[in-house]
Image (tube, rainbow, N blue to C red; front, side, top):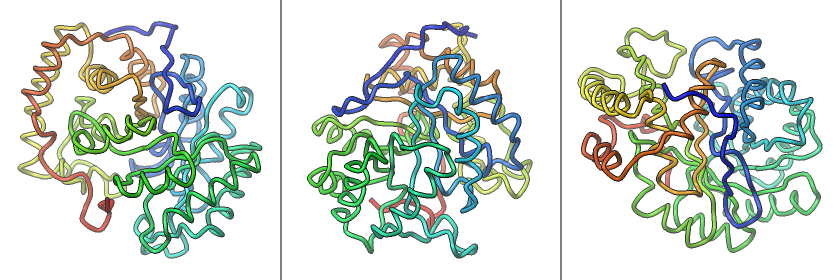
Length: 335
C-alpha cells in the first residue's frame, strides 16, 4: 500500500480563491446511512485528518436528521483549528416529516437563512466556508436561492456558494446571479454521468468539482458483502449496486481493479481516488470513513501516479461505470 506522505498537495476549487488539500473528508457516515454512529471514532478520524493535511470537511443539516448531530460532531472536532480548515455544509431539505426525510425539499430563502443560523450554532463558528444547496428545489427559482446565499455571503456568514446534484441549466442560472464556486455530485469509476456534459461547463464557468461517494459507497474499498449481509439501517442493504445480479458483476470489476492497483503498490481504494484526481486539477474528492487508518490510506492516494496505460485499463474494466443505479427512483436527483 502506498504510504502517507506528509505533504498533501493543495488544489484550487473554482475561480473564487478557494484552496484546499487534494483530498477532503465526508462526515455523513459518522452519524447516518452506514449503521450506528461512533462519536469517539468520528472525533478521532476528523482530528487525524487535520494532522494528515486534510483541510476540506463536508457535513450537512440532513446528516443529523434535523438534530444537528453531524455538524455538532464536526464543530467539536475542529474547534482547536477551526480557522485553518474549510467547512462545507448544506441546506435544502424539509426535515419536519419523518416519513419523507431525504425526499421532501425546501429551499425558500427564509428557510435557507433559518438552516444557516442553525448550522452556525451547531458548528460553533461565526462563518460557513461553503454553503451548498443540497438538492435542487423545483418549487423555488434557483435565482432566489442564489440571491439568498449571496446575501449571507455579503453579511460574512458564508464565504462560498455551492450546488449539489445540479444540472446545466440550474448551474448557469445560479452562476448568473451569484458566482458558484463548487459543484458537488457523485462521481467515481463506478458513476460517470458528469463526464459528458457537466464537467466541461464547470470548467467553462470556473467552478470547482467535489465528487462525493468517490469510493462507490464503500464498494471500491474491496471489503464488500452482498446486500443481505448488511443491517437494515445500512444503505448498502438496499443500494441497487449490491443487489443480486449487479453485485456479482461489480465484484468482478473490483477484482480486476485490485490486480491493477497491485502493480502500482497501491490498494484498490487508492487506485480509485488516484483515478479521480487524474481527471483534473480542479477536482477534490471527499471520501468518508470512520477509521483513522482508512483515512491515512485515502490521503496517501494523492501520491499514486497513474500512467495513460493505467487510465486506459481502468476505462476498459469499467467503460460505463457500475452495474445498477445509484439511487432508488424517489431519491434520484432531477437535473
